[in-house]
Length: 421
Image 1 (cartoon, rainbow, N blue to C red):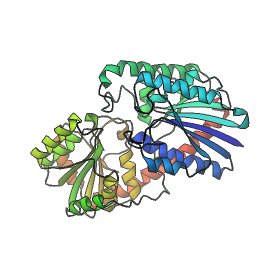
Image 2 (cartoon, rainbow, N blue to C red):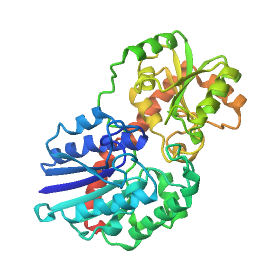
Image 3 (spheres, rainbow, N blue to C red):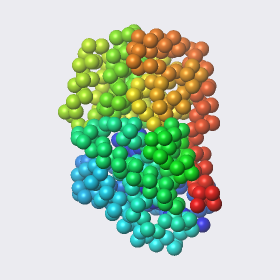
Image 4 (cartoon, helix red, strand yellow):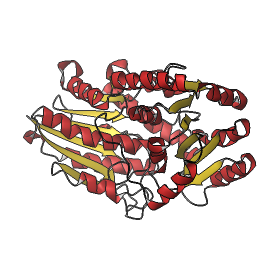
């Protein structure tokens, strides 16, 4: 059997700066494993918007990793900006989808027994509309990692508010195409987003297929730290207890909460923020709050720092996800995979994270509108007897529900089945 995958993504192929990119990189690692274990010949086209080497998020290491496998082929497609804009706006998405569709329509699918075109996130959402060779042998899948109704801001687009209506129309059009076109599906990364797409976008439940996010359980997670990472870590590792939050500098990530939390606890509080550009307004907000609260704020430290801390911190560590909205949190499962009994996983009680954490069983949920109450709850459960219990239960949750290879294998097998024609 010969299989072709057209894997389309704005991040994770020649760049890495988002959770979408993290998941795309995991798909790229696991798809070859699945095909090899099933003795299937495969070709995977990795299709991305053009990136210049000095573009935000461009990552030569990511690009080089994908070039090692002769069955993987990186294809950069124009979105009309000559590589100057990567994620872009609706006008760029339309050009990107048109150009990608032309590429896919000209592929010789006679050489393959099965083809899946899998598109990640908004820029490729409407690709199916222009693909002319869909059939029981060629199926289209869109994976929305978020939507404009969930994430109503994006700092990489300064005029995001002005295009929100266009983005909503773009997403709704994609769902309408999927609902009314044979051999097209929407893959759901969590229970929350499945309900969201059905309730808010009118997705036909028959067009939904699960591909829940998760971890590569047998992948090594050790990080070789840079000199700067070592220096920062040595200073932080002096504390016997620490609370850490990390994420992109977006207001919906709510890193301000963790900065302000320092006023309500004696536990050292550290926030790591990755910015989009040096003059990003929210950075001054973080700096002012950190001066007032005495929290430690690190802006744009080495990319590996946060994960290195979670792997190696010797005291008791709280990994806190304070986001106002999330379709699915990658951080809880990344921590669970470490299987350590000195880490407490904490999240705001929201959206897709709520299905990942059972409060006081494998982590704790807090209310971010209650700083004092949150600090008190964290301090109570940052105790050896709870940490051991949460470690055991959290790892069990990870194995049972968030083994990405198992989830991806089920997804591929369902798509090949008669029920999904």
